[in-house]
Length: 348
Image (tube, rainbow, N blue to C red):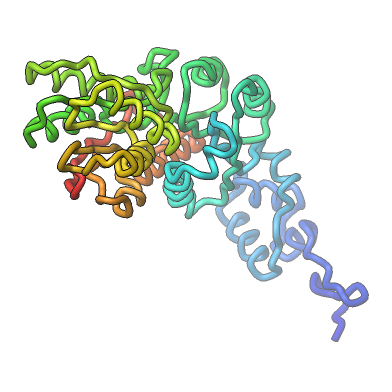
């Protein structure tokens, strides 16, 4: 049945979408009032706003997002910026946890997430994208000293929150959430020392990332307080492959090591497989502590003792802080820092 003058009247076989003019007519207001009511309610009386909202519901009107953006100057999208190669983003569970937490923070909003993979050497392209109004704000994870995103975002008007402490600017000048990586590194080393290891090593993370720097700092602090040597240090890149490669190097260079803190669970998983190939029993010959407590920690052989990095909670907190900025709220300048926890399993 076709009903004349109805917003649901058929044009051929396809229903026509209700228009803004029809919403205004149903609500008994002008087109401009209806537009303002739909796009934020500025300079609209409570009665007119209620009438427009009722008309929108009755007619099933869906605002034109392009037109809405022209009025509000907002895109209703934010960027999740990851300065890492594509294969790293697709394979590292850390990023899946980040997406999970960020999606939770945005669940009650209309904001969409745009994944921006800032490949090495492409930071300028990423910065142009963020500055040119394609998104309303940005969450940056896995930040490296050389990608310069902290400096650029600090000088821009793009609302942003970092997951992990930026290295290139004064941390008091940026919004970030993090875990206490120094305390986590200390906790891992202390657990190995209390377990009775006599020669301790670490496979540290990259030193152009605050997580890599801070976890190594914490490990050194605990080792030195125990009066032990802190010379057995190798540097990985938080990947499975680097953990496996450096485990071989560790056994060759430091054959007397009987305890090792490995600064990420992915590197630790690679190292455990390599130790097995080399005939090293874990924890009998060498005790291992990782960092992150991601899913892989329970599926390694043996299951991995590790330090909790609450990735989902950190990303959710970053999302909430970015939403607060977008709503014009004043944020505390102090970062939100999560305390680390030790989870003891069979590897140490």
